[in-house]
Image (cartoon, rainbow, N blue to C red; front, side, top):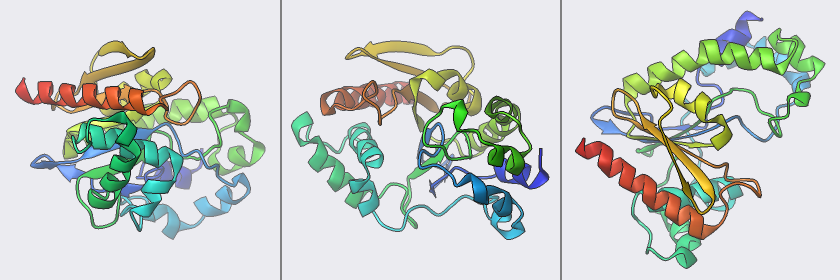
Length: 253
């Protein structure tokens, strides 16, 4: 494994950024599996040789430049929908959820530079078009030093997950909203949920959740970008309402 990749992977790589918050002013974090755009594997090796670029991710990114990005990108737009429900800013009518999400994006400005209350990240730092291990090409091996994606994943779990857990312990977000239910164990491990947590079914989709020792609610929902995921406004509304209830329950403990 190459040392500059190690420095990169143990920083805030894979994070869009925003406001990490603090114990006295906690944020809501959202966490995906990995960026889905797809890195250009041919440029990764030269990128990791750039000391300044690698050093930059030792600090969290400021976030997006403008709120319109959240309102038009499909995945972010769905995040705005469920966050608007969790934060109780919707009209309560799923038919108006798109309108509520746009208003929420404009007024709450999640993940936007200079704005407070929200932070966006991923478990794994490299970007792939999907999670298929066949995406791992020779260029990725040269850049990272790992022959296979499974080796990369194992290293991240053993080395990056404890770093993510330390962020959770330091900043104590009130909620980490994770997208990708089949990665529940990864999310729980990374954010420090002890045990298997709880699980329930909403509209034939699974919600898993647990609390960290510091009181952070870690809620794992289906991916919001695939036919088998969480796409319908009615289901997004129900998931958001349930997570809002769980947040209130956690506060009352």
